Image (cartoon, rainbow, N blue to C red; front, side, top):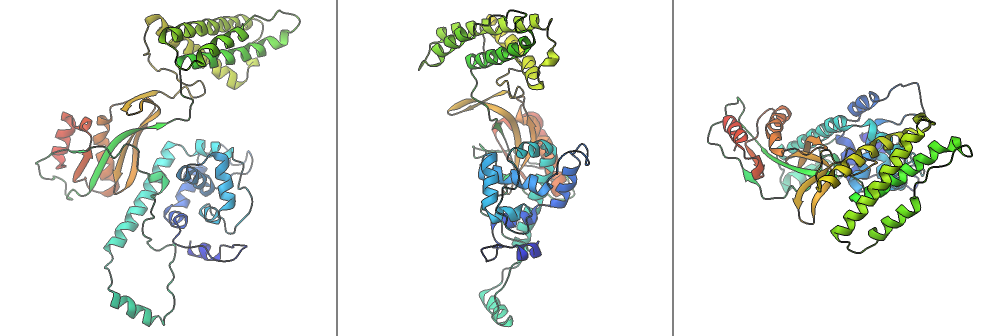
Length: 427
């Protein structure tokens, strides 16, 4: 790593700063281990276009998330910044886009949750070890430092990348502190002495949060209107082979669109008006589904693209859910679909100010000395108290001893967790 930093070519002269945050982060990531995991995600090494290295794939995703950029902006930032190119393993500055921005989608698919969790563990372990090594080193006095400078003949000291750097001002993106972690915390009490051979050490902080998905804020009226438009496209595809030989079924798309806009454009529509509009859109969607069922007798569903076929299945379930809620006059249904493009996303009731409901995966995270591990990530809601014991055992596996203190919300203080912590001597 030190040779790569020293020999990195800059066309405008100068050298890269070894204390830069991207240089330091590149030094603690085990790129060789990541490469082994990344290669295993390929179906066949001999088929397809050129594959990019794991360092480019993972490094690009870290840059994107740490800087909060879009896919297109990420590639442009890499093109303009030599430190980002060094972080991706470049040996010289290249004024070109590293790859097409659409490849970031494939990088995310290949680096799944399990691989990223393992990589996160490697990075956090390396950073914590480096931090503890720095703290363990005896601090030299000013007189000793002056003597060292005189012994070196006044030459300027240099720092290698492989040395133990101080932790950067911002933690690595994959070990970022989850949101909502700054709530009022409670210590689980225990009066029993530790039973493990190694004394309990450290503090484990536990909390749960929601990782919002990138979807449009869902409303029942908007979902049904979007479903109706997709079904109209499917009808056009299925009727296309019979143009001139069969009369096209009427879908009343213009009338349905006008009905939707008359309500959606209102500043604050009443509940009665919204329910009436939803009932109308349900009628249009149900009519289109029956038309598709009739057209299938003449045109097989194989004429549809994979995307259209998938959307048809999702809309069929969406129609069933919305019709059930309309008939029962409720807003609750099991496995409720809130996005046609991402049907796995579920609403999470969080009770936070300004947003009672969030849409995304629920995450149970643990925090140790500023570094976070994702212990559980599920699209369906769950009680975070059930993850405490697994998080404590994971802490024991990572560090070789149990924590001395657990900081958590009151929801974690159930009988099983209190007895578990008491047995292990955890406060």
